[in-house]
Length: 331
Ligand code: SAM
Ligand code: SF4
Image (cartoon, rainbow, N blue to C red):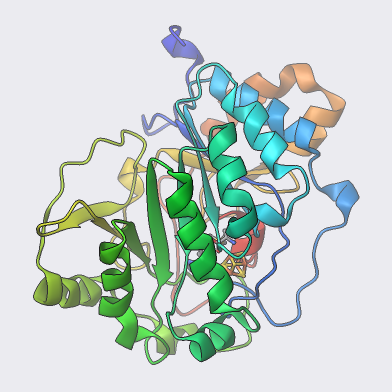
């Protein structure tokens, strides 16, 4: 892309180069902080087809986006996701195709994903204790995820990162265990503060809220942390350090305690084709209608929509202002 005027820039001068594409709102787990126990999912007719997802991605890439993350819900439960990845990886201008997954199905999918051109994976795991993992995910089997991580290591991705949400009184005694597990395997690890997205039934988010600063202090005391030289130009809002005497990086994604919006370089498209301009706001655009009714207007609509990208998110820890759950948002 050489014509700068055709790049996606918002009204605060931020260059949008990173798309998170949710391929489904469905999931084979029910993490307590992500979903309510009783969830209803979108009917198939309201979900973008794989062809529509490719079309939308192509439009973003033509407008300067060079990194796409496939996510969900659980992306690996969407039929045809490997073919979608294969077609995306071929698009001219895409520098990096990556995925976030809960790892349950990676034993089956790690190698095919690597083979079609997925560069890196983020794998979510919040506990290394089987009973606790089951409780946190409502019915998940930890062994599946551990096998999936092994399969991903064997498949030879450029980098693998674990995503961890630590909840006070639930799994906050596992910070160093999870980091040690990542270090032993040469993986990176990120700690994500729980966000008030959607109504949940299992716990009061106020009571489980934990500040990433205390996690960083714990890790520094146990392993020693140092500044990391970080080359990912699309890294955006995460703060990264590295473990001493190791290549493993540790990321802190702190939407609740460290407003990182100034460096926001991303937008999300939900499985039903809603373009979300900010995780913590409801500003959105119905891309499904545009793709189905007036596809030639797609790029112009994307360019226009950037002007509505809010300056920053507005999470209120005491009030649910965003009623969509993370699985419907695309994490
Ligand atoms: N199912 C996949 C997975 O779990 O990795 C991908 C989608 S999931 C919504 C993406 C990430 O969002 C996961 O790492 C998950 O832990 C995180 N997440 C879900 N709900 C969250 C919340 N309310 N606050 C913070 N992170 C959340
Ligand atoms: Fe599913 Fe991921 Fe949400 Fe857990 S965090 S319920 S794995 S979408």
